Image (tube, rainbow, N blue to C red; front, side):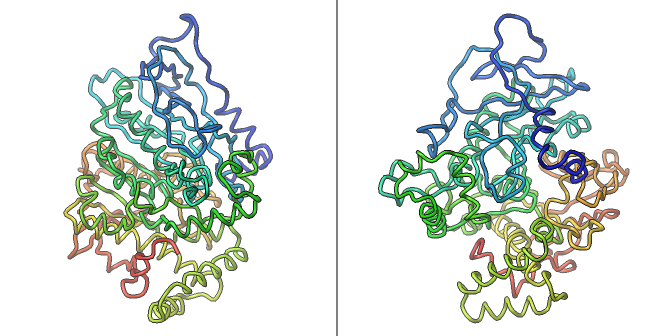
Length: 534
């Protein structure tokens, strides 16, 4: 939600605003009093949407047969079953419980009953099946939801009626990424550590089986996401059977780096169990969802998908280098000042404290020679406040992993288009921070960053056109006849010799060698990728 909107209604009224705009309860339709032209027959029912300005929206469609409530908490998603019923698809479902420490998690009505998706399509006479773009939202795997007004895709599809867009939800935080198998009764919960990814897979399976009814091509699906959503999009190709459901990936500021080891996951579980006074899963199941949600603030920004060797490989980087994703075409990259977003969100003083603690824990796990490299890097970053550690974490969490993903995918013979996003907010702290591109991607200039900075309209249209062109063809390059500014833009594939990336300067989108922008410090930060998130 745009900061101006928050200020206008007040944080306490944010839920009410969202409920008024997007909320309600979808009901079963009896009789014939509904618009047949807006009804789509799916495996698990017929869903009736609403049309605005020639765009038909279907909100709150369940993509599971049973919601993960009661005894199904921490269980794998249940597939849909055939249903002849007719249902409204007018309203967004509630969002997944995330983490009470993160403001974005508290903006939406939340429930464990949360596995739903939304569809946007143009109401046109086209008889051809359209490419499908499936959005996976971010939020550190702990927050966010499809109800976020930023991810309302009306504007996007109105401008690009030749694609269909789906946004899907997944379990978050302790409900979606919680290691339980080490507990006395944990053997019955072998998937708990990666349920959020399994939810995404189930949503993609639903899209594969049903999107043709909306006019979409199930054989031409692109998944795209930002932050945790981007991380998800780069992890899904590593899950067994996933390649049947999509052929392309767009990952904005996220990679397999955003994963944790089993040891780190168990440490988080044990901390939370001690805090709650629980020793078994049975006791955890008795804890109300809202209390688990509140308690999870204890492990903020530490809940990630797990490299469990069951669903995700123990070494995702190695898997990519060995060709696990070589039949998937990628478009991915990072922003110039990723971690500055977190400085703004935390506040400078809080960020300084948090980043210092994070860096100390990082250094404690490194051999002396690597510690010296990290310290040397930080000393060379100008600024004596938050900037050295902020830049270090930008490198280790986002920039270096983006380049490593490009390296490993290319090394394996796969196709990779890499970008570097540079436009800045006038805010001297935000600069070109994490997520600053979202308003441009979704065509929501009213939801630009807190300063009200709106990027050039032609620039933003070009970015969207490249995303759509990639989804349609597998190549984001634009010929002069379809480029918004009438100028052809050739986006070269990443290669191991030239390492070219597409630089998204606001008034000059063009390719450059990585070395010209120094996106990553090859000697002093690139090696940190082998440790994933520290």
